[in-house]
Image (cartoon, rainbow over all chains, first blue to last red; front, side, top):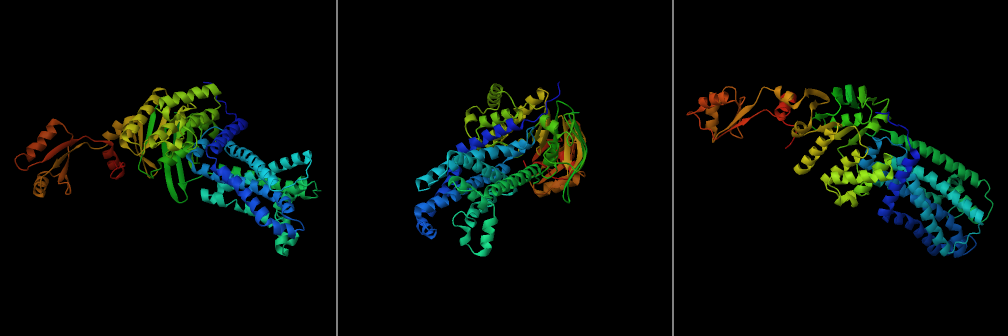
Length: 263
Length: 308
């Protein structure tokens, strides 16, 4: 018998796992729909319920507030999508099929990259829907085509980083319930930043947190790109945060996946 | 030897699960590890299939060191665990195609292999339904079919029939026999003596992480003194009278029965009957040849491994 080919095929295996995850999404679309619905409900709430008052507070009206809040809602759509990632990773980990993958000669990381790629695709769809609804309710971006493309690329970078974080959180969760709660701060952090109101309206301690937490430069970068305004240091800060989150979470995830699980 | 294990040790914290296990499985044979829950069967399978590491021991599977050449071991083996390892959200067919893709079979070959396996495992009709709708027996068959997609030469089956109805169990046995006929080496754990007796070329009796006996089913049966005759009486006084006549009998007051060592030969039976005839009325007499339950009792001091 000839010697067995022991080379790994991470790209091919990742594509296989991606197909598996897309099948899951198509077969059970309820979670996807729920995760898209959440940011849309927040958008409608903030434009139609709070928008008049908040807009006036910022020296404008409901329509101008829609434009102000839309970037925060767009980032929130990413946070909601990755909450789904954590849930489906945690569900996977409770299933025996993962043990099967571990005993097979496959590129191990492909189990995770399949989820990551699937979630990025899901996020793109979700972002398109959320941006579409935002435009309908009064969001008026000023971006050129180049800025739109840059914003699109930037959103994918942010998604990529947060998805890896969710992959780690999903693995560290002992149950599916925990997995759905752990990424919750990601959905709340845009509130504690420049997403819904300018940070200078906040009390000192909170303002300090709001100015230095990662979501503020991320939202400001998106706002700058979509509103055709100077980005300042925000773009570099945001990309640096994303790089740190992505790399740290990737290493953490890989370590979690390779740990032995005894029960 | 396709599987060779020497000095395998594993502890989870303070709890010693495997305490110096040695075994060897030649190619194309079935080795059955027999033991009660908690004896260390599943841990052995998990270690040999590279899922968890051992604390010590020299372990080789399919010619490769399990620790240093885990990748080569994974390429050679197939594992069907105790807990179903199917993707519940996919259909049976999609599960098999997923395995075909992960084994890098060309698309057409993968489809053909999946169709073959669906037919072989009687899952053609269920093939397009999600695995979550399958019965226990169907799920177990799909599980094993997925293991076979890559045509592994060494297969680990961890309690493959636990929880199956008798018919599904026999079906699973036939599948195992067919695999062995094709030269596949099988390492099987079970808590059913009957299953080990039916399938295994060699049986290792595992108790508290140690092999307490090893051999063919016949060798193990020979290790215990012999069979016995069971006598049942209509009332306690009959039991008492018989007991006074038969010094070597064990009594079971609840069943009003005696268990008398006897090899079941005509001569031995006649001697026994002559001793009782005309003195005690015996309701029922039955002859028991030794089975693996007796072996287990003799070797481990436990009542029974199976609850059946």
